[in-house]
Image 1: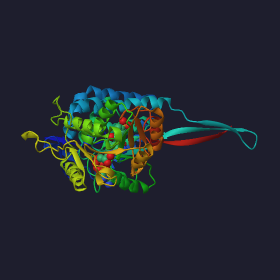
Image 2 (image 1 turned 90 degrees about the vertical axis):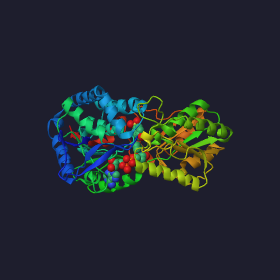
Image 3 (image 1 turned 60 degrees about the horizontal axis):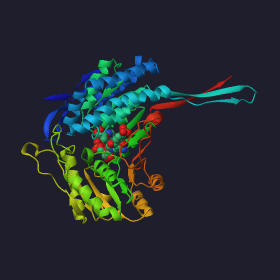
Image 4 (image 1 turned 180 degrees about the vertical axis):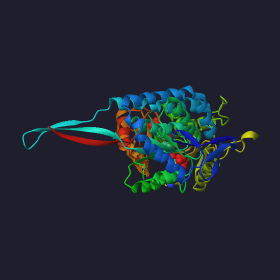
Length: 486
Ligand SMILES: NC(=O)c1ccc[n+]([C@@H]2O[C@H](COP(=O)([O-])OP(=O)(O)OC[C@H]3O[C@@H](n4cnc5c(N)ncnc54)[C@H](O)[C@@H]3O)[C@@H](O)[C@H]2O)c1
Ligand SMILES: O=S(=O)(O)c1ccc(CO)cc1
């Protein structure tokens, strides 16, 4: 049986308490291994190591030297591509085609992309005349914030963790990562790559465990943590923000969403259907940017519902490495129960179930896995639970609309504001909609098309702050102004 150890000060360590928890594979609920839960002593040790590393070789490195290490990390991940792939797939059950094209390559790229950013970023400077007739020069200096707590979810474990660790290290910080309890593997494996490339001990640390009264809470409450970056549920973000208030620590929060796609009747129909198929069902609907509300202009409504139904029904569930597999399982039994609870609620609230609504028929060996059917509903009011609440499963409600103003109001009548996808050939309308919808990310005739130099983040209850490109520097550095009297 595998063991997942904490990674502290460059070494793999168990814990003082002897406490472990199980890591299971959602494909068949089989046991992958046991995870050594970090208690307060291990979290203290990880934070102390991270703090000490700031004053050691790491803290003395030039940007160019740091960037060499980041480049080596990207190369190191790619050299061990198959190990990362197997580990991620075992934890999540996601299809190979997805993990090998998105999760692992992006895990490596997240180290490379911030090399260019940090090497080329400039700060402002001003010259001014002083009262005594002399001059003064002010200029900005970016310094690392210090020890960054990185608290991660389970849906894109390596991608979302490195999306934060990459810029944090590029800026000269040290990190303590708390991966999701559901997906401990790739964060743990990254410790081996850190050591292999010669990353100084204490720069990258990993503590395993849960949220409340466990590693997550111990870490985010720790007084020597100088900033917290979090991706996960809005409710957890609230708890983390409260923890950060103690000591006035900055937070970056990437939270939940209830994203809408808007399909106008002048769209390229095939592009709209293909893209919404991905945005609603990819990664079994477990993407924060995913679409759970679809609004289709009335003349296209019936045709669109029929087309998406056909696509949903073609999403064969199965083993990750079976080339026929189009959809994997949900992450856990607990999440399966939550999603199936919403499937039942939709029916209770009067939905027409266009397709799905339950658990697919699976072969005997996979019956214990966390499978659910891709599901489409129509006919619900805008206040129904499945139209307003984040489900995080492969499902969506499709509603007809007539006018631009009407659909804008419906899309915006939600507490979340993460992402939207708009399908139309009318460039004026596309831009009006993109500017009117209250979100951090608006896609036109596309979805999940990312240029990593651009700001990523949500508005309203979908988060605080932006990460990506130079925007990450706002969070991962302290901007100091220096004024020189000349
Ligand atoms: N906006 C984004 O970029 C983005 C990206 C991916 C996922 N998400 C959101 O993440 C959610 C799914 O992920 P999840 O279920 O892992 O989220 P979650 O909030 O349950 O857990 C995320 C992490 O927080 C930890 N945690 C839980 N309670 C804590 C506490 N009180 N203190 C400190 N740490 C705590 C967990 O152990 C885990 O590591 C969805 O809501 C999804 O929308 C958002
Ligand atoms: O900005 S990205 O790193 O591309 C990214 C992708 C997906 C998500 C949420 O699932 C967050 C960030």
